[in-house]
Length: 222
Image 1: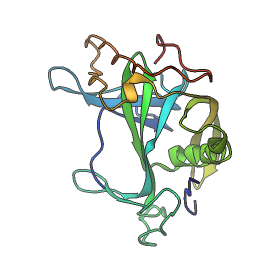
Image 2: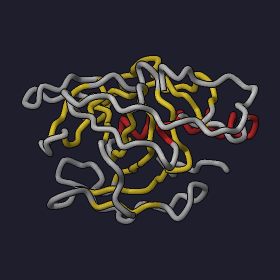
Image 3: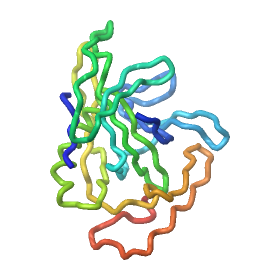
Image 4: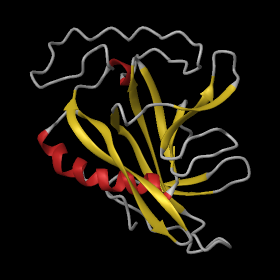
């Protein structure tokens, strides 16, 4: 499988993480940081900064979707590519009053954050997608030599790029190593509540099959 990220569906499972390029003073979100949003154990919505790719996440490529996104009334409208190896053209060349395209590249992928916690990275922001686009080249090059494994991806820095009248802060992502699928990304994994006061759930029991000889994650991490 080769990932075609293009020239530049259905609903997903929360909680969700996203890259914050410039932050939000109103929401007390830092610039150049990762944000998680969802509902706590009492059903109350939350949005907060969390360590994500800085510490390393396991990316479930089996759930990866790429496509296009535009703003909607209640939520973004997304059109996913028919397959990872076939990127579709932008649905429309229409532009906003600010000059940017109405339709922007978007991605969705389930990741393991560690300590049994998972989230969906789903975003249509240019800086976030550019970070993934660069990472996809590494994935394409290394995947054939790591069958059945998933990439443990880490953020190694941030690159600031001038765009129009402002700047975009692109996360620099790189594959640290390839690992076995962690329990939290298996079909029978327990659901994790990401609320600030929620207790950590126990990881699902490991299968009876013998582990592969290649390096794998420490159970304390993922």
